[in-house]
Image (cartoon, rainbow, N blue to C red; front, side, top):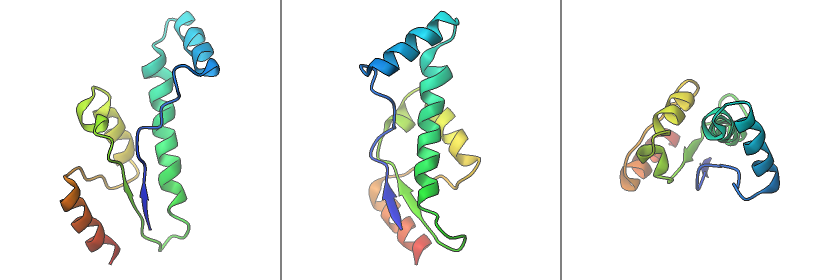
Length: 105
């Protein structure tokens, strides 16, 4: 199975609940992005990956073409969190397709 996670699953900052959480977290002297929204996005990605593994012997590959994981300041944190449970590989699309086909076949 191959699953594509098209982007980092951050909450919409314009969503009323997200705004309320943002205000509440700031009132506690914390940083909403680093202390809540980023960890939640990592949990959502792990959940998506977990859905691809229905049986212990089943192989699955998850592709995330969102380059923010590589280029934003939070990228290393996301990779570290995912590496705790999964094999991570970052490369161009053509090499990814080759690696995925070798892994799944």
